[in-house]
Image (cartoon, rainbow, N blue to C red):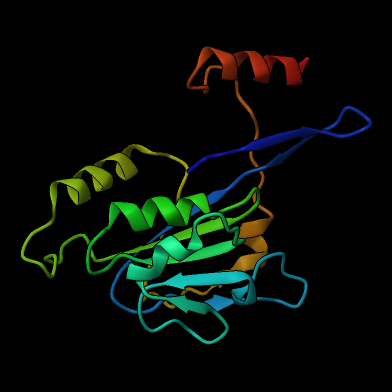
Length: 176
């Protein structure tokens, strides 16, 4: 999920406001810390799945369609019991510019609770392995996600990294 929004200021400066994907693998619940000056915190977040930590708005996966048409700066999708393509699409669609999607997956070595990973899950893992953008973390290692630092991550636009010809033209227009 690299959906970078590019806006030009009155002075011609370019503001990049990327959406971020954080992949978390493991069984223990991710820790979240928000400093008072943080740009994103649990109060801004939706937790799709069971057992949301304090401060998050919790929503069962079956109710994920209720999020259609809404924006949330932080969405955590608990996909340890399997990756539901519909929930993932809805979660990703809720992230505005500058927002963060945390995708919580089971350990790579663990068996899927339903008796083997689905072809979709295997394909998703393969694509995520090839995708350079996500921040990758493991639970159980004592990390705490500093949301103020995640919100402050900067990226740069590089030509040749676009998907379509129209995107390439738009990037060139902004650069010159």
